[in-house]
Length: 366
Image (cartoon, rainbow, N blue to C red; front, side):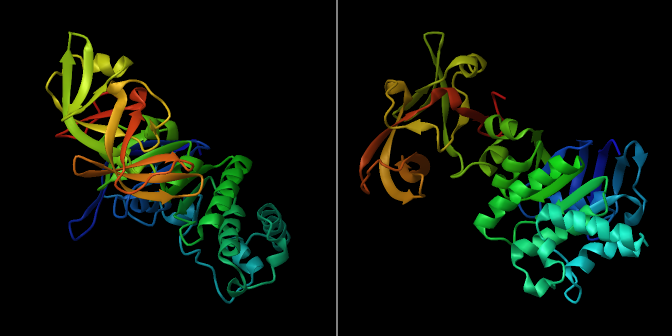
């Protein structure tokens, strides 16, 4: 299979709910593509349409230029790993992994070889005689992966497979899934609402909201060049800070963001693109990490406010910051000592400002 293509695909249920709207997407051969968005955005529905578990209401879904709208799931050469793992509790690990091969009447010797090979790669060979109730969450996840691996599918589909694991185990399993993709050289389509998983795993990310694609791009594109306020706010920890204000152009060349006593001078390409927007109402986005207390770049880079909260998170700390009655959150060094109610001035990295139209939320610079 060379890839998967959605051509104006829609999914509408009998109750009138439109889960996916006019989806146009090319998934490349051997790509790791992540569908990212909040609950109800249509990402799992999109995955289920690839698997054949949901019918396509409108448009065309193609596998390697062959339309598969009406092709049954067992003929699509895809393997799916579910959020719930969906293991058979009465079967051993070996039989759970082998089940799909046994149903396809693969010879016993070939089945045993494939199961053992998958178990070796996933480091669960010593668990083959156990049942799911005797396994940890991470071990059960490996069994679910192994059951998909042994089929050697053209496409791996994963629906939030790590959401039931604890934080530390999720990190290690991300690495294992990424290694699995490199080893198998197979197309992976992965659904998640976790931005860290998307940024860690994906070759490309598709951000969805209310059944509509908001942006498609590499992890760096999505994080550094968000095309609207939804995409910008969905990625980042803490989320991006927004301040409403206006563009001010002075002396015919100095372009700044103005809100009350705050004035931040735009630089480079951003200043050029906004040079003809004097007076325009905009929404300024400042990432939590794009401030510094130790850097001094003049008054045109400072944002002043009062400390509302200090939240240590190990490697650094989140600073709750009252600016004109709005609470912003910034990430600062863990060695900085702040008292509640203290007035603080933070230097903003002017080269990393994000600018959006206040009314539509669309980016004015990307």
